[in-house]
Image (cartoon, rainbow, N blue to C red):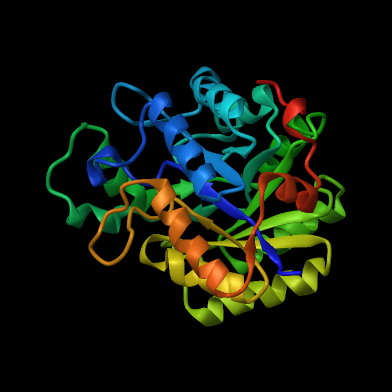
Length: 308
């Protein structure tokens, strides 16, 4: 039978600001609509952040998350994955709140502190809708995205009773070793869902050798006890996802990671990016995994065991 590929769609994120694209979902209603569109297009998992209604700034207010996750769950069987990354300006306690209170099937978890440079985006835009946007990007050249060993352990221990599985985000090779460390400590359990991130300034690049190095290292550290997925930032999104699919991995796309649907063309929906990578997957004679198949592959607790 053809191999199944899980598509995760990251719907809005904290990297891009409202001024960068008129198609970026901001309100809970827009986020829910975007997530459902991605699910209809073939995403088995939707990875979700929240934004303030009034200005589109990132927020970890669980009440805002609840507005859209309840709508998504009522209308779709898609697996809901909540961020604990939030934004680089937030500390772990704030970032943890939605996952701890809503107890999703999956939550993201970053595996290390790092420089997280968004400042190069500033020169591409002249008109800003909100006062916070430009300083948020400009000051990223002096900002560390904090994820210490203590922070990571705090998030894992706080969610240990929820049976939430983690999308373990690895921006560099050392992050894979950190994941292996927490596996040895028993704070994460197999099968691990390793999400390798390529092309963020401060993390590993997006060259094919970088992708292969990540895969080889993960194979050596985790053997058969993990599923490997990738995301490529910006223009790297589809090329890196294509490499992963061809190498036996899973894929992540979405407007959190890239605003584009081809050179110079903004993606109007998250669904457009899901459809694009779905075409690639099926051209490789592979099949897109359903939410039920993703739950089985990742050994998730099921949609009825969440707190929303």
